[in-house]
Image (cartoon, rainbow, N blue to C red; front, side, top):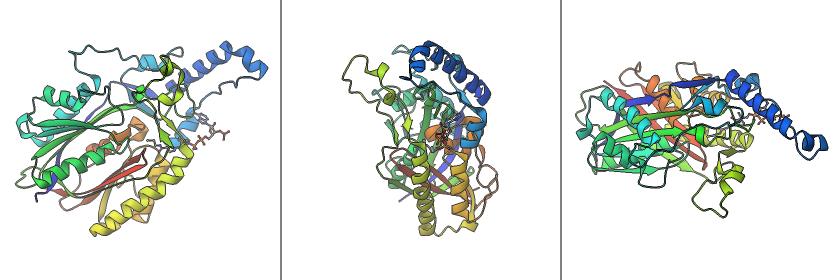
Length: 373
Ligand code: COA
């Protein structure tokens, strides 16, 4: 058996960001339009008026201050309220592939590797731009990588499930290395007209290069152990599959986008994740004192604070448990990898950290890593 290590990481960040104030101004203008258009029904009591959103609520409930998106104008147009992402021709690169390639090139450059050093590409994301051919195969072709590629989806946990998949293939010797990319266009599956969730998501792409650990001569993170778990729940759900019953179903059905029962998620996922991490660390003999960093899924600041405190047995300081959600919002599978990519270089040889993602399924994945010079 071989062992596996993370040798490079990269983050593609879209050009445009939307502050809470900009987002709330657009939402409130949309709500005013809606209420004016439906004044008679609202007056008659057959329809509820749409209430305004507020930046103060968003920060207090989530810790999110802004988000990056591929298209700002479409999202902020009160009469449109969804991104304008024109359909691309079949001979053009898909959006997800383009974003992932950008992040992948950064990860390969950090590791000092080129295409012929990579044997596989895994595109691990919450939503895929098309059913087939796999986005991963397109990324493989754009990067001129030999070998194979495939897509996988475990919602917000896709990155850690992708890491374990790549690491296990490296350990058994079927491949020497893999890129695990997480391109997330969350703006396209978010209902920007729904006050309860319009602030939650942003767009981004991340990449990790994972290689056989033997004879590495550049700084890297040994993958000491991975652990995954799932438990069925309907509390985070998107019914946008391939079956259609009527032609205009897409127009009519709110459930074809992200839906959640946020309160229940909060209550049910927290104990699941805290226990998962504690058991994983215990089984691997990693004590809280030995843990230098937690790179957590980035959905909600209060949730992360709670998990950090449970795991360490005290309030972690900001450097021990870095959050990026204030700038990026929830970027689904990419969140923990953005945190890892931006806040890992300062760790010293022998330091341990844990990457943990969680979300729909429910699903939770943890990866214990050790810094090596
Ligand atoms: N602006 C102002 N008020 C708002 C609002 C907004 N944008 N959205 C909701 N509210 C109101 C609600 O109507 C509700 O009012 P009420 O008490 O009069 O009924 C109140 O604020 C509380 O709403 P609620 O939805 O219960 O808020 P919350 O404190 O649970 O926070 C989440 C909402 C989504 C931020 C929080 O539940 C969460 O983060 N959950 C976990 C999400 C998660 O991890 N999901 C995984 C996705 S991958």
